[in-house]
Amino acid sequence: MSSATDDHTPPRRRLPEAVVRGARAALVPVGGCALALALLTGYTATGAAGEPAPQIQVSAGRIVQSPERVAAAYFEIRNTGDRDDTLVYADSPQLGVSMLREPDRRKPGAIRRATKVTVPAHSTLRMKRGGIHIAVLDPPTLKPGERVSFNLWFTGRGRVGTEAIRSHLIDP
Image (cartoon, rainbow, N blue to C red; front, side, top):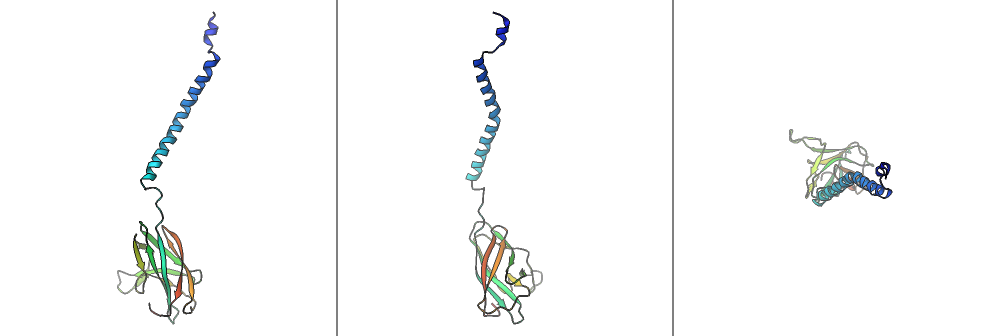
């Protein structure tokens, strides 16, 4: 026979070689995906992935307003989760501008604006006069028993909507 027939690969061998080349080309991306899936499965199995948001409950909301219309809101904030959370802002669509206030540690008896208030895991923060509270700037006159909606904004939990009731008392 001639040497020309020796140079040609029979047609039935071309298909298996093409399959082998394709399988080799797919091995790297498929192997990488399998490795990534195994690592992600291990990461989530340890409990480190997707930590749940802190469990924040807000209750016992009350507003105290003096005859001069100065007003402050007080809440009880309970964190039943396993992570600390931070209260960074509070507002009331009905009352307008408000701010977090806290005692000034450098000046006993003075109150200052608070930029954040940490609520530790498994604890309760009770706002009170002379302590942490929400000052309402230039509020309207509120009637005793009137209900006012508030939004408390946390870094982990996000917005928590709640209500406060205008207290009959001037001082809590």
